[in-house]
Image 1 (spheres, rainbow, N blue to C red):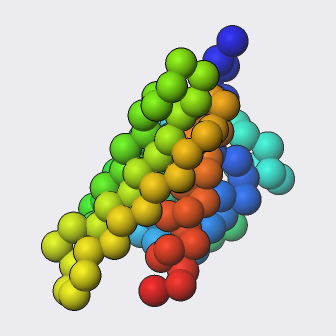
Image 2: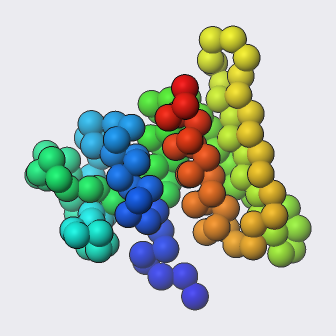
Length: 125
């Protein structure tokens, strides 16, 4: 059964998203990490210290990558028991980027792998 915490990427990914500029956004989050532990509530960057790691939902994280870096994400069920993700960068100078990966056992696993791939892509550009 899915819990509320399943809507949030893990601490390590949230740290990476912060390093890529997420805390610069004026986005209210429904969680943050204190000593690597997810705490739920309403958190806004203006009320956080520099050490605060906001915990965006997966949806907020994917919105951030779309708006700041131009990557559009799609997670789909491709067989009755498997999921896939697709990442596409539109309107980029030169060739548009397109990534796809298959065979994840759950939607949550596909979300996490997709988020990790987005972090990797942006960090290497």
